[in-house]
Length: 131
Image (cartoon, rainbow, N blue to C red; front, side, top):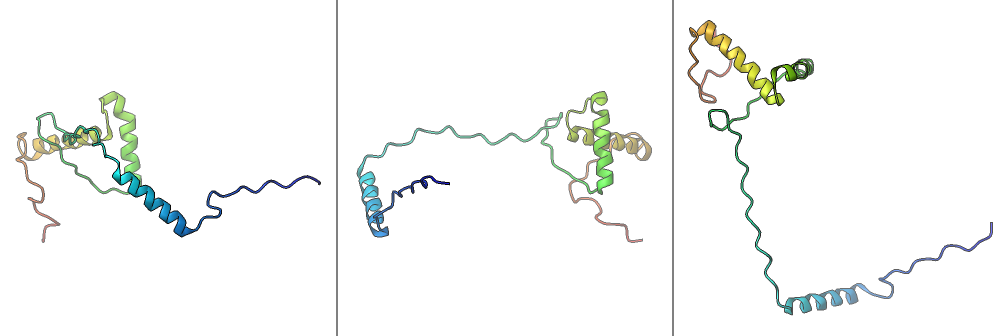
């Protein structure tokens, strides 16, 4: 194989030292500092996102549960299977509707059909009963 070797590219730093480049950068910074600075255009303030509101107008709070992988898979499959039929727009809608259905059953069974009185977070008994 005969042919010429590729030409080596020249660096823009060839022949310059660190001190020379540093001095040039300082001179450029001083020149820029002497130029009048224009104020940046005003930026419109960004509004904080509105909290998600329930149908009653109160903000919703995040709650969560623990489940193993098999249970989580079944829960997601149930959501996918029923979302068109029941009109759940999101996984959260599905969870909320499902839990509220169970709450209504418990109100019928344990509270004579009357809604349970609300309990604040960490307001109820924590842990298992000591009996």
